[in-house]
Length: 157
Image (cartoon, rainbow, N blue to C red):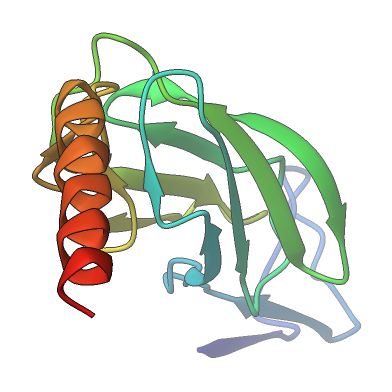
C-alpha cells in the first residue's frame, strides 16, 4: 500500500509561517510474512546419533537467520546463500519414535514472522531398529534360520 500526502500553503509551522512548497512522502506497508519451503531432509529416517541435514528456501529476504528446531531441539546453521539455508540436527536419545516435528521460523526486515511446521519428512526410529519393525537383536536368529534353510535346500538336490 502506498500513501501520498501533499502538504501545501495551508500548513504552518509553530511561528505561524505558511509552508510555501509541497512535500510528498511515500509510505509502503508490508504485512506479508515470509514463506518457507523445505527442499530436502536427508536421511528421511534416523535413530539416536544420526546426523540429519535439512535444506529449505524462502523467496523473501530475512532480517536474520531462521530458527530451526526438530522436536523442539535446535538445529545448527551450516550454509546459507541465495535464500537457501541448510541446517544440521543430530537425533537425540530423547527424540520419540515416529515422525519428528521440524519447525522453521524467521522474520523479514518489516518484522513479519513466517513459520513452517512439517511432521512427515523425518521419521525417528528406535536405535534398536535399523529397519522399522526389525529389531537388531533378532538378526542372529534370522541369519541362523536362513543358513539352515540353505542347507536343507542343498541336501534335497
